[in-house]
Length: 184
Image (cartoon, rainbow, N blue to C red; front, side, top):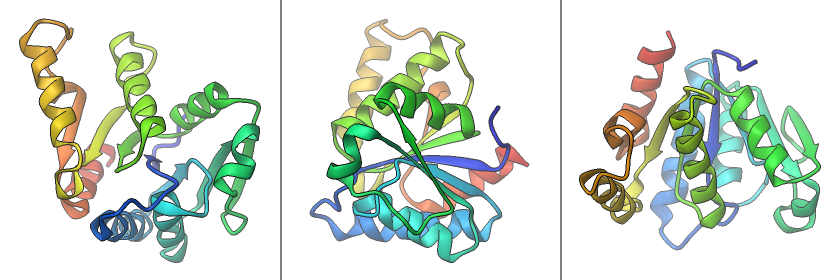
């Protein structure tokens, strides 16, 4: 059901306080479009979500947003994207994002972004899907989380090495090069 050229971006509907987050999200969107990929994401016009979507669109990508009814007033859906899908709830949103993408990229965001990351990892472990998961670790945003995941591995709580489950990149160019080599 996934498209071989569709990337799911999981990220904040807010910009955060560090301008590097928007810079890298914008570059990632540009690289998605320039390399012939399409984007599926949370559907907001604001924050990091909006930066990825707007730049992917500007560089030729088909951009699909998936927004649950409950967040329409919160995240203010992006009306300029290729397609906006409204779901009944968050679970249906996440399921649709996972099904329609070949890989997932985690950018800076809040607890919703972490929820999406951990659900993807859990689904991989349970063989519900086998999609590659990337973290774009802009300015070390996820350093503490990565250290904690490594601790979980060291203390015997993971079924496989964290490096087999999640690929971490500090900048968008190297991340997209890995995506290209994996999907092509």
